[in-house]
Image (cartoon, rainbow, N blue to C red; front, side, top):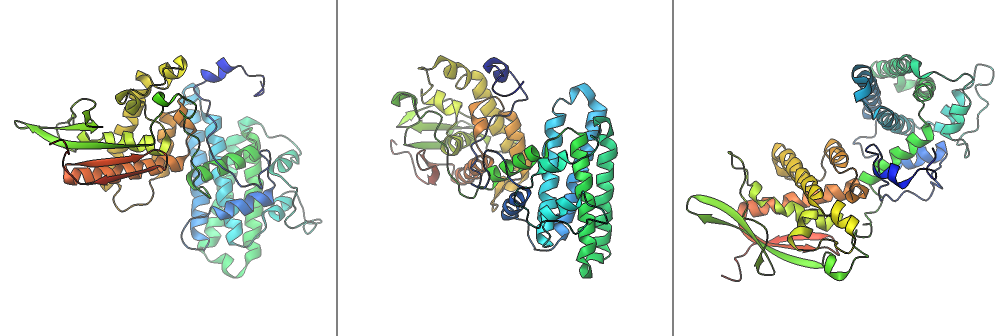
Length: 418
């Protein structure tokens, strides 16, 4: 069934459906299509790996092919339980393509030329058009003489692994140092095996390439442009305000410590403790809800605390601002806090690992926040931990949340009401 024919109800209750994220792609991608040349040019702008040599790209290529093998192993082992197999294979093939393309770029090899030589032989090897502007990945799959069956995927992905292994071995021995043609020959063989593997998995390489760039620009956008807020069309009394100041402080009752929060001089929420035998200051974790609201425009917990649930829309009120959404948010906060404890509360770091962001995306699937880009989550996490560390050190102070300008800050101070 195509997208236009699918019913709203089938989409709404499809747990495997991934919502379209707010990601701004380069204008060279038109109507979801790009040529192989365009892909290479765009992918090269997203190469943030250190060094300019070939080693990291070759190792990355080898690692991503290993991930393909791992996904196939899980399919064979888990069968019916591994429902997201095709989506995972498409993502892994997209990652393989990214490393392959950037390896070609670093080696000053033209990807369209390599693509054309996949289907050349000795007689017509040099009949190619460098930087061919209209050649797409779909064209390569259409050129395959005989379709490869899905049952042959294991054979094809093992062949791909073998080709990449041969490339890695020749790099290790220094073969490419004085012979770029040798590298080019390896790249043609890898490309040939990659197309066969994609075809046997029934994966559209154009879709894999596009989704790969969407994922990349979701994490590393050319420009950080926030999407419209989820409550932009709501009545004023159901929208997050432009700016709020919270007073958060640790207090004592006998030998027990707890945290209270005030907004507009009114205590909101319950007294918070760590809820754990070992002290870890989780009592200050509500700063993460503030950071979510600032950078994602999303926090069912904060909406409940401030009585800003979207009552004018019963469906939003029940499904996006209700108890289950609040539990999801608390789960995300607990999850990232646990990861932060393992990483020194993300002190002196500029980025979090992709696996953390990917896990969060999976966790919130089905909720409006799933449309937020990875970079928004990353900023929310890092800013949340920055405020948390300061509160944990000072034990009390003011947190200023600017929801319009997407900033959150902390200042030390006592309660003005005292």
